[in-house]
Amino acid sequence: MKIGITCYPTYGGSGVVATELGKALAKRGHQIHFISYAMPMRLTGFVENIMYHEVESASYPLFEFPLYTLSLASKMVEVATFEQLDLLHVHYAIPHATSAYLAKQMLGDHKFKIITTLHGTDITLVGLEPSFLPVMKFSIEQSDGVTAVSRFLREKTITNYNIDKEIEVIPNFIDPDAYKRVTTNCVKKRFSPHGEKLLMHVSNFRAVKRVHDVVRIFALVLQRIPSTLVLIGDGPDRSSCESLCRELGIADNVKFLGKQTELADLLSCADLFLMPSQSESFGLSALEAMACEVPVISSSVGGLPELVEHNKTGYIAEIGDVERMAKYAVDLLNNPVKHQAFAAASRKRAEDLFNEELIVSQYIRYYEKILAQ
Ligand code: GMT
Image (cartoon, rainbow, N blue to C red; front, top):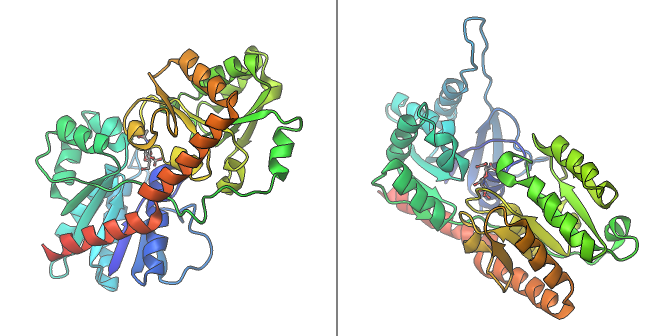
């Protein structure tokens, strides 16, 4: 198939899923055309069957805001025409599904199918803004196929937007060969020179991630167990989290690594992964941790209970219940037999339910179904 993929190219789950999907499809011989305003973060080097088309947004003093939606639609028309795309798969509905709709309307003879994958705040937060809601509902309904990354997100889409459309749940995935626990211990020794337990969190440090809760959970754990917290990623809440660590007197035990690419190496050092989010439609970084045999302690929101199996691969607790999450963490870190069982169960769940082979095949079957309609 000839498939166009549009996503945000930045450090974020939807862009990661789109890029890994594109790479996996290219490996299977499909021709993939990424269309975005920058090269997707995980698309490095030359990859057979993958082409990248950059969207250039023109600026003019009259335009107070960039008109990316329009520039993207024009680029979609260009790529679909010259490359004879069969379908255009857009990740994160705003504004990609709208640009795709516009592009399709502009094309006369060669019409492609549009598949929109809903990822999270496009549905649960941003899309609900009155200035976006009508156009979101319309663009989702006009897509030929719609997928959501969890059952939770499918239900939210149906109820929030009153959408009368079949939505296929296709969860996120990992490559179990790329995400596995690596045995080398050297990085761990840097963070835990005296065998301290290592707690980890990876995110874009936005308010929905509640990274302050990560710090507070860790402060409680540290009172009971010698440990280190490693925080990976960057974003709006990073500075205030650094201040909180100083206020709580735990700054020496917390390492802020900023954005990192070699996540499997780092996750392999961790004993626990924390994800106390306010909202999380799936929780891709928690899945990456599980694949590296790291049990997850998370909030019970959104799609997280579909990923984290309570009392088996980790624990879930109410949003903001920092004490309970800390109690779970201490319990697990103090019990090596249980910890080992949770670590093995995490890997097994990631491999059995969310492995690349399984999920990419599911996408291919879905593409074929939509193309046949
Ligand atoms: O929705 C967002 O905040 C952005 C999006 C992204 O691009 O990182 O994250 C969402 O998509 C990920 C990939 O499907 C999911 O793993 C995240 O749970 C989801 N984020 C939220 O729902 C907050």
